[in-house]
Image (tube, rainbow, N blue to C red; front, side, top):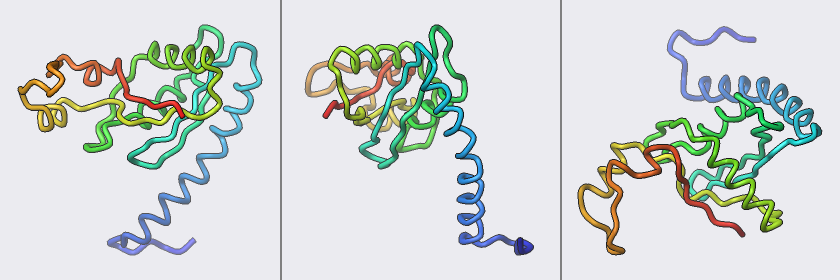
Length: 153
């Protein structure tokens, strides 16, 4: 491998980031395949309408949540305007899994909005009431990492 320049270029940074991502992706993928084959594995799949990212992940097996998967989900459902990452309540994932199962939904959930940072929520909504009459303000379930907006195709 060549020696990096003293002031790495954007191209060098992107290439190195891609190499790390490819090298690191093989281990989680293999462990996800093993987890998916275990009895009681719960998985979810998402397409993000704003970032165009896609994710399919086993987030729990039996009563145990998979820590790495929860971290991946937290990042995936980050505030797509600010990049801030919240710690999503795993019960939200259980609710989505039950919904997927009840509806026999084969398509991924389409994510419209996940975690919202307080600064973004205040910037967009201020202290005004919405046209629909409600406003959660600083008590928004999105800010508290207990809500997300989805579509089911």
